Length: 380
Image (cartoon, rainbow, N blue to C red; front, top):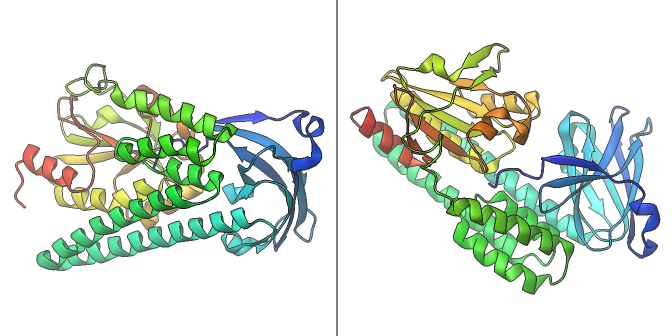
């Protein structure tokens, strides 16, 4: 998944709605039963990592609220609720009605916006894929415990196939949806480091499919910036291969400071991820397997989460069976650790040797196991 997931910069919109033409005005009428009274915020998610606040309103005691804005062209929006809950929308104009229950907000129904319904169905499918990944992870853990190596190998192959199918599903949606906000949202889920060929083709076709839109312009600018980063050498700087791993001191999930250097003398996988990152969650079973296999052989993991919400972070740790050291400053893409290591997309990782030198980067899937097998001289 591409990295920043549209969560970088918040810019307040002042006066634009009132000064714009009413031809493309839209109104969102919401009703969420059982919802605590709160301020809900309507945000526009731009293709270049900028979030614009469009409108906000205090909800009524019965869960009713109304939000409005002006969309000169179709755009990607979300309603931001308390506890970092969201409803994602693909909006152009007209009246959109949303109904849901606070306990199961993600099961909302929508009327008046076919593009938003289309996008919701895609998101539901993504959640289904993530549940399948989690189920397979549990299966593999059980097989490891029972020592069923032959069945475990087949399960790992199935898991890899699931990852390929997931990526193909996202790519197909990005390529075929008739709605640009959904297409760009799907493309932004993909990791530029591993899906560069597809993203290059997607960028070239976007202007033909949706010519002259601001979203196309923003996405192409974003893609060109990311593409240039991929072409930069990764082994020349202080965090490149062969260089020393810069020190990090971050707060653990339990609340205490933990330094990266405290693990010096071991092989350490410095792993950057986040609970909201679908490819990260898909990668976690491989990392769990490697940790359980090599944790008693001078190997450990220092996991850095680029989360903003501690509850979501803690849930992901529990759901993905993560037992190694987890740290975060809960600043998302403003994390000092991500800046120090030049992290532009996740999942990504750095393998550090006992002397503190970086010996490998971006180990995915079975690559991590193979690398550890070699450096630790472990037997299969």
